[in-house]
Image 1 (tube, rainbow, N blue to C red):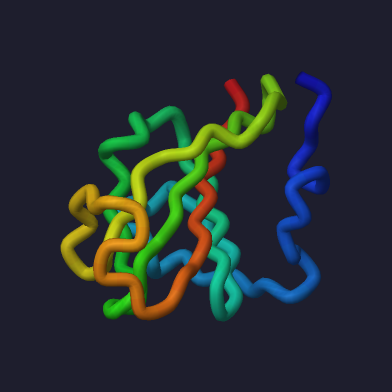
Image 2 (image 1 turned 60 degrees about the horizontal axis):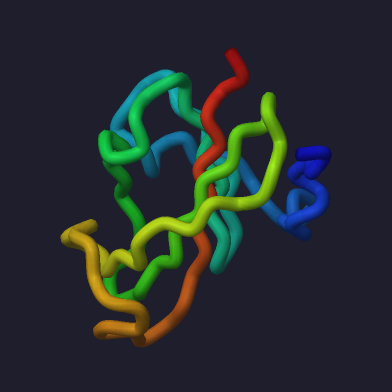
Amino acid sequence: GDESALDYRLPFWAMWDDNNITAAEDDFALVNDDTYLIMTPTREKSALSLALPSGRNYAVAWWNPKEGGPLVSGDHVDMPALSAAGEGAGSTAASSLVELPFPQ
């Protein structure tokens, strides 16, 4: 995969850092009103613990910046529980969440 983060039209220029949305001290996060970009070390996807606004349904995607390739879709999750939910279940507003593992 030759894809880069720019291929996914993430609005980097309109985002700010907010490392407080993850519980881990070694994660980094860029956010705006509806997109959350989280860079984690080699932690497993399922171990990601977040503090995001409640009352929203979040679409989750994973991408490895070292290997490139397409975004891999994950479960839709409702906040604050972060439990897997069906697509659109309880959705009042849609937001995107992309997690990028650190390159190894």
